[in-house]
Image 1 (tube, rainbow, N blue to C red):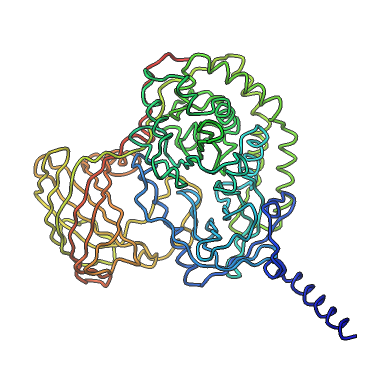
Image 2: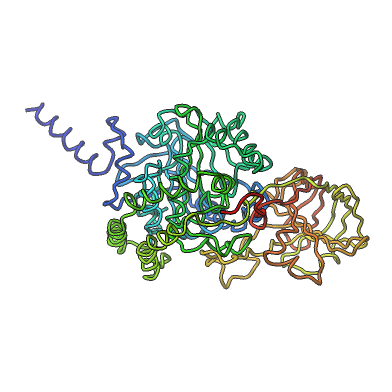
Length: 608
């Protein structure tokens, strides 16, 4: 009788634990990646972290101009990387404790109200709680109003034989605050690479506004130990792609799997993935597979901007208004290849095969309707999914084939211009000196009437003196959106001093040689600004302009004249109390932006 009672107790305990999601951890069971990628199921994830860490994470999502320097030619972003915070997560009742959570995103997808997330399982504890995954990627869908772009893009890449992440949809709650439906995207890391390539000892890179070009190859982010050591394969490819005169297809085929790349290239073009590698040198991974003679395979990423007609919002900057839809050609590799004998014919043959065997309009529309039905009753109020976003998606799908077939009838289509030289920086000078000023809690325009600064400025081998020079400590200028989706809606209607803008040291002067105005802006994170007798990290720019030519100071034209600063900033005194003294010294290199959106080269080879 006693044994029966004990068995009954055990059964009740197990039933309770199963109902509350504790059975996995207690009995050594394990979630599998397949459990989290069920297209027909809307999963739920709850994230718990301290309220103060949640606010910090949100503030990091407010860095809207982090990355703008790189976008317009500044090379690597000078912004601080996002911080990880300790948290517990629960996925459909299964709890995983002590994970690392941070925000993620780049420009348009950053959002303080509904940030995207990276969840790293082993940041604080040596654990592997989900078989086949070492982290989670949760995208807020700010740029994917239909909630279908990422799922469809990666599904179609996989159908075409290109390894791509799996996607599911998740309801996300943080500290009991519901944030809406997110896309859960499989991360391209060790488990993914091993699954598709059987080995993880090759070089893995992630490209964010970066390409294979000798002066810019360091801007392609190395994602594993092999890449960080030498970048051997990446540098070899960059050297081959630098000059069209030296372009040798046989040598290139030793470094890339050409058949795979042509499929990848076609899929980006067919899907209107304007923000990918072949059109925008952005959102891609490249892996040099040891089991394929270390040849690079390209993998898609960041597909929330696919299914777009035309070349995206930046097409007017350095692009070609008459560029064909069927061939994206701004990246180094795509452009060089298309202008090589035999490649347009191989491209056409594979495009026809993909249109026949991969692109099925009825199947795609069926998936769009399924996703709408799955998610429609679970959207966050800020997920203003307009009906026209779904209608645009369906219209794109229905019209894409005819558009491509019309260009196939005129094959080979013509491209004009060489590749866009990727963003990079070149050191052109030095800036050393000291400053003394006070903190002003409101922005001022007459910087030259404040404070004292002593500067030694050297540009392109020549010393620059100043006839007038001033300095002030003040809040940074509020970020401008430049037409991207998403907004700082939390800040609307709030006084500037309440927006928690980061502090800046603003230095302005007039050159005593040509009356050029010089503006130096050094931005420091609020949390570390009051760090007396310490060297602090910063983000800095130097802008030279003529006040009578506004386009050199404001808008897109100003980016071409902007230089970035790199080096050391040391505060002797610093405070954000009104009228408090700020004093420090600086020793910096000046880097000039090269390449990027305004740099597409003239074609030096035959036009097709």
